[in-house]
Length: 307
Image 1 (cartoon, one colour):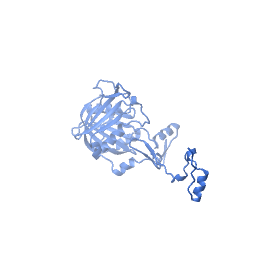
Image 2 (tube, helix red, strand yellow):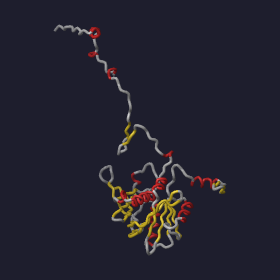
Image 3 (spheres, helix red, strand yellow):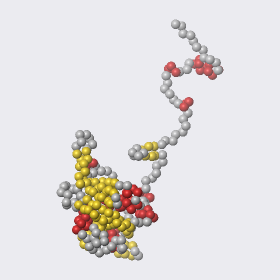
Image 4 (spheres, helix red, strand yellow):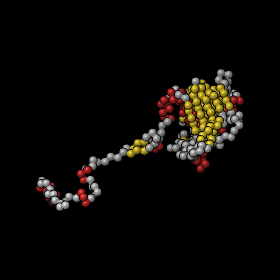
């Protein structure tokens, strides 16, 4: 590939395909995440990064080497790796005396850090410690958020949005019932965030609808909120801007209720009921003499019937 005036021109078909895959699209690909550890990490942080990578696979890149960087002070290295691997999400783990067992979740917009939130691990149970069968790799999880803080506090709202971006997986049009087997549950309570991972089991219930049980498979994390770096409202709005081609065209006189039922409104001209065609019956026919009398304004003659 050659670069002329800031424009990269491919020389081979392979480089052309590579540039086309990186080019902006109307429907973007699945967001990839890069998972890396800092210059000093603990065993808890290292194992937590591996377990979260197992949940995120195959849409994740795990860096095994240490990266001596501090995202809150200088994010240039994160932006460099993001552009290199085409990742818009990142998870950075570190450990020091002031902030032990530290995890930083973040996302990027146009290869620049949009927002990031620092969480501390207080209690951790790994995947390997829970000796039961796990969900297959690449299973799309169901995300459940509990706690008023996710709806009222601004930092928890951004954290909820960040977790949804990080763990949501690919966008699908339909899901079969047996495929809904992985549940990620986040609870905000007393300033802490509890992350739990479950596997849903479909049991016999004696009817058509199965009975659902949840079995914890790990990992299990008790997190505490530490530092935050949130984007401004204008930049956050720009990052959520949707192309005009993807915006649904508004259809007039069509509405939907809370259950998704479609309603349509019809506009008709005022009807003249006097000209409405009804069913013809012999008993309702007017005789010829009655029609002539009505036209002259006289009462119609009634013939007597002899008994």
